[in-house]
Length: 107
Image (tube, rainbow, N blue to C red; front, side, top):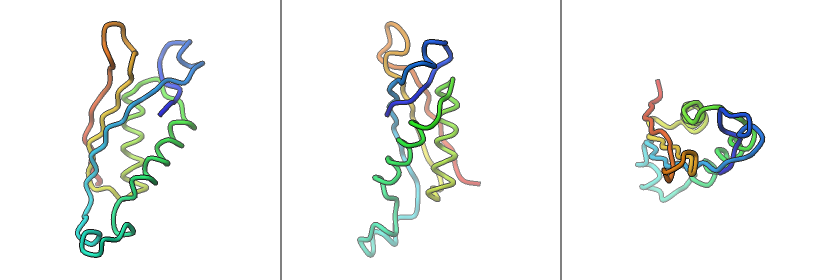
């Protein structure tokens, strides 16, 4: 996905690519029993929501983006616990990407 992210002035003027890696924890037993999408996480809806969030919001730090995305997923999709990796390719010379990995859970 692309978003405005970065602390340098030039970064505030362009969209940059972020790559997300998500592991989402929820109770899947009802979905598995009924083979019914209504009882589990709709990955397409989650991806669409995250894309919209990235397009509509700007952040200075990858860390801020990660925390806000984690909070959004927990609040809007009822996720119990998640692991989220956010990578910013090409952000630093001599590195393929930089980023963070966080784990959060619902209160």
